[in-house]
Structure formats: C-alpha cells, structure tokens
Image (cartoon, rainbow, N blue to C red; front, top):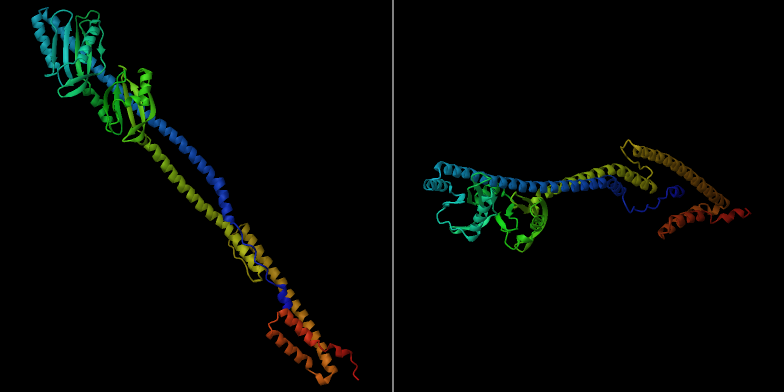
Length: 456
C-alpha cells in the first residue's frame, strides 16, 4: 500500500499569480478601444468649442452691427424730419410773398408746433431777416450746444446737412446728450437760410438698445472716445476706466473704420472678470460696443463641454464594464482550468472541470478532462500493480519466516510475535511510516541465519 501511495504523492502548490489576465485584457481593450475614443472625443470637443466660440463672437458682432444699423436709421430719420421741416419753412416763405411780418408769424407757429419730447429746440436763421426759435420751456443752451448750432448753420449755408456728435446739455435737473441736426432751407445750391434742431439723443437710443439689454452691456463712444450713452446694469462703464479696455483702444486706433471682437479683463468689486466685447461703427463715426461676461458668453460652450464629458464618461464607463464582462468570459474558464490542474496535481484524481463555453476554451476543458481520465486510469493501474508487487514481496518474506520457523519447531511463531511486538513498539515511539515498514520487514528476518544451520 505504501508504494501505491508514493505513486500519487501530492505535488507542491503552484505559486500564486502576481497579476490577473482580466487586467491585461482590460489594458488591451482600453488601449485599443477607449484611448482612440478619448482622443476623438477630445478633438471633437476642441473643434466644437472653437466653432461655438466663433459663432458666439459672430452673434455678438451681429448685435453690434444691428444696433449700428438702427442708429444710422434713426439719424437718417432725423435728417428726413428736418428736410420736411425745411420744405415747410420754404413753402411758408414763398407763400408770404416776402412780407416778413406774416412770414415770421407763420414760421414761428410751425416751429412751436414741432417742438416736443424728442425735439428740444429748433432754430431758423435766414441769411437776412429775422431769426426764429422755439424750444421747451426752461431750456438753457450752454456754450457747447451754441457752438454746435453755429457750426451746423455754417454748414447749412453751404448747402450741407450736418449732424453733430452728441453734446452735453442740462435739461431741467438732468444732464442729457443731444444731437444738433442742421439742414439748408431752400434750394441746396442756393439756400436762403439754415434750419437747426436740438434732439434728445436718449429718445432714439433707448428704443434701439432697450430690447437687447438682457445679459449685454451696450455703450456708445464718439469719434474721440468720449462716452455718449450706455446701458450698463453692472455699473462697469466708468470714466477713466473704460478708456483702458482693449476693445476701446482698438476702436481709437481704427479711427472708426473697422469692426471687431476682442477679450479683456476688468476689475469688478476687486475681482478680475473676463469680458468679450464687439464694436461696430456708425456713419457718423460713433462706436457702438456690445460686451458680456465671458462666462456668460461661452455658457453654451461650457455646457457643451460638460455634456460631452458626461456622456463620454458614461460611454467609457459602460465600455469598461462591457470590456470586463467580455474579459471575464475568457479569464474565468482559464481560472477554472488552473484550479482544476492544481487540484489534479494535489492528487485529487477524480477532479474534473466544468466549462460551458463552446469555443476553444471549452475544447481545452474537454481535452483536460479526457487527459485526467487517462492519467487517473494509468495511476490506478500502477497502484494496483504496486499493490500486487508489495503483496508478493511480503508473501515472500512471510514464506521465508515460515521456513525459519519450520526449521526450529521449538520457536514456531516466534518471528511473527517478534514482528508484532516490534511494529507495536515502533508505532508507540512515533516512528515514520517508512521506519515502521523497515522494522516490519527486519523483524521478520531477524532469525534468517537459522536457515544455514544444519538440522543436526
């Protein structure tokens, strides 16, 4: 029996692996699949971001251009209004037939009638004769406005229509920006007078920019860079500060001949805030500026990036889970085969692996089970042969012991008794199986020398 057990001595446990195949599979899948996906996603985000940024800048420039068009249209409307009033003055002058008293009374009534909330003052100055003027009650012209009226009249005497830059004027308790519009009275080639009017700039600025205030700061500068008007909810357009804005510097350098979009930083409440600003130029050389907080301007860009990253993260997470599951379908059968091989090596000859895969791993498992069946059969046959050889060997030893006992009838059974006592003593002493076996055989042979003693 000892020989048979020696044939199936358990093998030492194999060393534990330092890594797992599933991690290698995941690394390969991430490198081959997810890494290119991440690179493509990054490039798409970069391209989309650039496109959205460009689109936002174009939209903001379009807002500035639309505001400029409306301001141009408003100024053209003022010119047309003054041209119609000039035609009325000319018609009254012609109808009077040169009677100045009648003409002056009719002209004065006309001027009084056109003065309103928008037209603060109107003045007619003929080349010769009596000048006429009508204006809002309590309106006091300052030197700047008087100079604008004189300059406009000089231009009108030459047959030219002139629109001044917005001028400061006190109206009641408030200070306003006003425009002086001057047109020739009579034929353009030979005008007989100049018709000038002072218009409230805010009266057409508010309708133009009022609908565009949401999220935007809109302001206008004259050709010299002076502030004309502003829609400024945040209060960042302050004298002495806006002149340092990069976009304002660009406007001054361009001398009213370009439109562009740029970025700059402003300290608001002690904190730097990035702004995106665009400007366009009116026919009069005024600059119309539209600016917005860069974070707000690029909110759609940031939202796009955030959404893309979220979905890309979900896609990569799902890909990792699927990759792990796919890798597990390969690594789990390999682990089952490894455990089966280790069990078989430990002497568990009846151990078989169960793998349901129908691929190469399933075929490998079937081959392993077939190999285990054959090896188990070989070992069983070897064990049986060893057992038979052991029994023959022990039979031979017992036959010799019996022969010795037959040689000396007086000591018959002595060898067996010695053998029994010797084995019991060896077991009691805790000897190994190998030592007990050697004692078992030696005790039977301890009287082997009697065979050579003659019977006599």
